[in-house]
Image 1 (tube, one colour):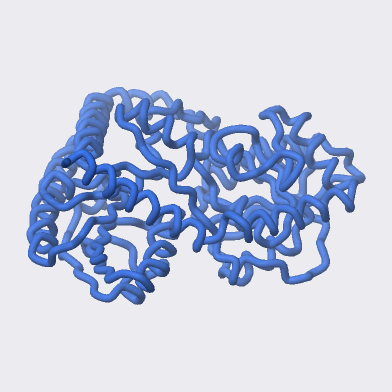
Image 2: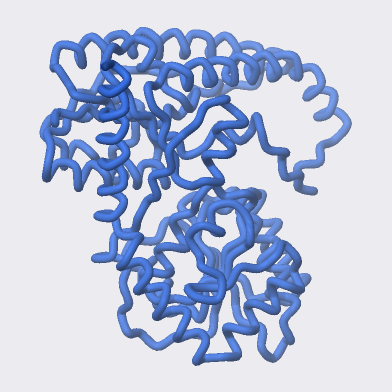
Length: 410
């Protein structure tokens, strides 16, 4: 088949998904990649593996660099409307080029401004939109931090800007919803995400589970060190404060250091976590943007991988830990309930610090259990969670949808 892939992604899990599927797709099919110049091609560059790439110039508005009290958010609103119009124009240009190339289908990914891309609106080619999640800021309650509490003057300013923010959010949410309706088919990463997509977009989506690169993420037979590890952006949604509280519940003589590795770090969140760790007497270390080799070493040396983000759609990092033979203790919520088999490849625990601490202690104090969980999890990854398995799931979903369409046509 001849396939076009479109994305406007930054670094992160969605870019990993697009890259790994593309890396496998080019072995069997012709793959062309389309993206605006705003897409991040420094992280997992798709142009290095695609048969051909088409990059379309796009300049989006930059944040204002000067202080304009009382005006900034309203000027931002004008920039938003201009940027959305630029994306519409770009989508028409991309669609015209795709029509001239004659693709069997288009594989779509998120747009970093409005989530669901405009492109399907202008295409007569079947589209498969891999939607990792709806825009969570519109559907999930926010996590409030004490460091976000403002002075009286700041609160007055926020109240003044509120109408502009509401209008911006309303416009983005409505456009995201409209664009999601235009895709021929929706694919997603977990049944938890499929439920969220149904609530947000009122459309069914097919689950195509992702995978992990077992050539990179693998056991290195390194001695396990006395620390527990968690990986992901240092932000409130990852709930590292809950992990600190949980580790802090362990007896001081058995309390391991907590190592966090993030691709991005919120300074406010980092300061909050360090202060909380100090008050709970938890030895906390935070690393930013480590190399992939360093990350694999962290996984291999950790006594356990602990994971408790708030309603994570799927979560690739537990799979990476499992691929390295590291026992996983994860929250019994969201995507981890589908990737971690409780008592077989890891432990699932409630969002209660005492319960989570008990699960951590169970693994740390029972080396036989830790080895069994690590061994079983590694084998489970090899049997089900490789990118080859993920690719086969993707192509099966595509061919089944084509077959359904053909039958419906008759």
